[in-house]
Image (cartoon, rainbow, N blue to C red):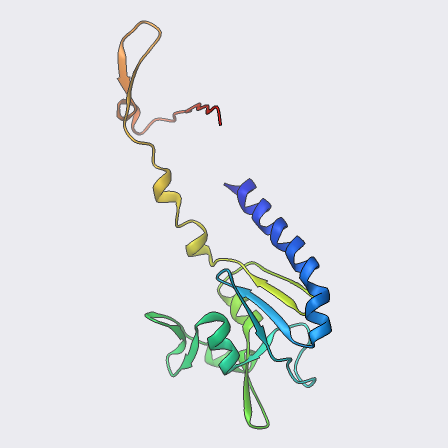
Length: 168
């Protein structure tokens, strides 16, 4: 599982490098969030260039999240913004409110990779392991070397090493 995640992140970094030249030429920034690619407007020079600041309209189009009184929300999912740190997330520049998407990603513990004007946000930790429930081995019965049948459930609570092989 860890090798698969490392390969996924390595391939995303390669994609980031390949697309960064295009993003730099257009002056816009590209966000990959929930495997959806969106171009967003450049942020004003007065905001940190180390972070990804997006307008509230770009936040909604890139991620589906909107700012509500209870926090940053999408459908039934809502993450409160810590009041003591609200300036790290929101900044009013003239008539536009900017949102720090990279700070939000760090708060949610999402893996983030960026190269110049291209940003990739990986899945939140609760999404990263969502497939583990499907990795539960079904109960099966096989004979041992003496021909006595044993089922996997016979070993519940004990450490079991399952060796599998596939020809594909």
